[in-house]
Image (cartoon, rainbow, N blue to C red; front, side, top):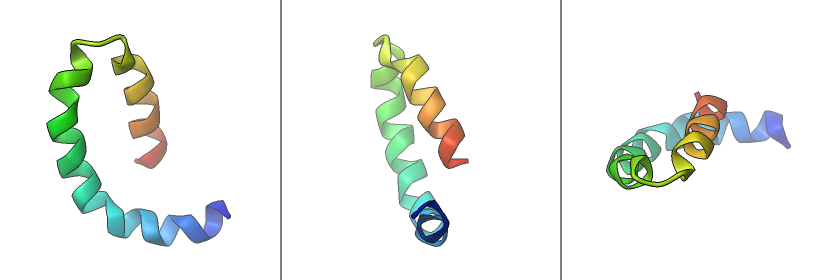
Amino acid sequence: MLQSSVRTGRIETSWLTSLLSCVRPILEREHLNEWFMQIEANHL
């Protein structure tokens, strides 16, 4: 499953990055920031 999701992941990176840039300011005020960084690291 992880192998097949890699191709779609690269395509989703563009809108995902823009989405994260909008959500990041909100998460930075929350304790979810650390959890968010771990997910971002996994996608990148």
